[in-house]
Image (cartoon, rainbow, N blue to C red; front, side, top):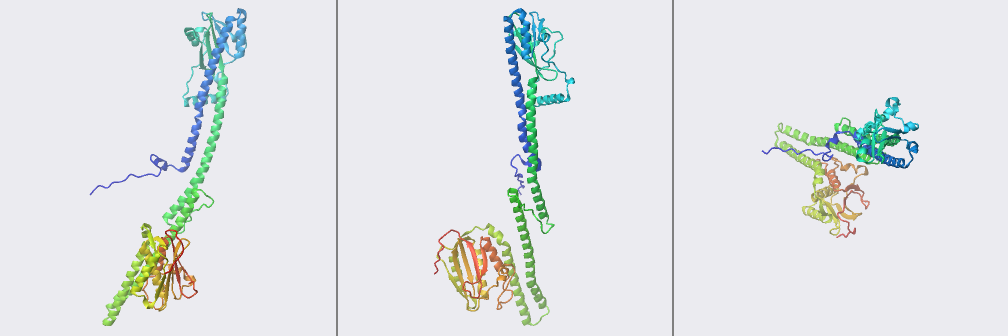
Length: 531
């Protein structure tokens, strides 16, 4: 015996997404929206590049301006050089130092005029500045920003104490560097070597760069916070409008599955016109149809039980009496009753089995084109050849060929027509006339079967199609019919997307008129030619 194989389970979530089905909809909706906002948070990376560009521009600007000052000092008289340095410092708000060839400090703008900046110690500032610096450090860590070195005033103010002056003297080119002041503001410094061997150093506490970046960061943070808040609220609203109705539907579906209550009200959500509303109404209709099907099944089972009890009870009585009866004629009569009950049981079981299988069989049957005119004509000829009981005559007005064509299963259609003709013959008087007419109207094929019997009262016209509802002629023996013929006929016709009903005869004479309507297979000229 070959080993059994187990196919892997497939998930409707798609490949690689089966994990998402284990998470509730509310956090999933929230996570998707917040993830989109996380992309907006990438603006902080832009702020880092924005700050870098500002610092680079300021370094270049400071280097160019200091080079111009060096040129101006070369061309200025000796007694005007200090004044030129002081004026430059006032204009740029820098601190300018000048060193001689030996590296000794010979001029300092802070000594000539009021200082243009003051380095602030963090411990002397308010708590808001501490929060700002904390955010600076946090964002720098997140975006992996390069951290410049700390700015420290040398203990002995000589040219050799400043690395940028050392590098400028060795390379012969202007140097500009950026450092952090104690309060994490930028210190921009530039160093240039003049032609006469002196050197200039300009330092600037560029607090405006920090203020600009923080202001942009604050605006971006406010936009991001507002967007996050709006996204969270909208996500919760969306989850509420989606998840809660689905939870209500799920709870109702569970109650339907458990079957603890006979009537379970599935919310239809009539105010919703979206997919959830469509789902709610579909589930409500489905549960209602399921309840009807269950009720019909229960009723059918009860009817079957009731209908089977009568012949079984009769058969048991006949068999029990056989042991106590000695007369041959009475024993023969009891055997005839038993055989009749057995035939009745066989007929009942056969009809019950067919009635319970019709829907399933029709759903799997391949429908073929059927010319109802030709089919009915063959049936009438075959019945007349066998002989119609009590001299009842059959009349059929057949349309021309290939006009009354429907799609269906031929044996089932024959069963319907047989039931209708048998019913009409049964209720027809002796030597009566049963008329069968096939016509075409509004893309439907109409087949009517009329008899000259007592007819069907209007109040009973729907009841005769119920299972085990049997009203037979007075001259017919009991038990000849199971009461399922017309119920089977209706099931077959509805399985072919048609309808069957009872109407009055058009000629106003007594009798019943059964009308079967089936959709045409192909639209054709509705003209009818009777032979």
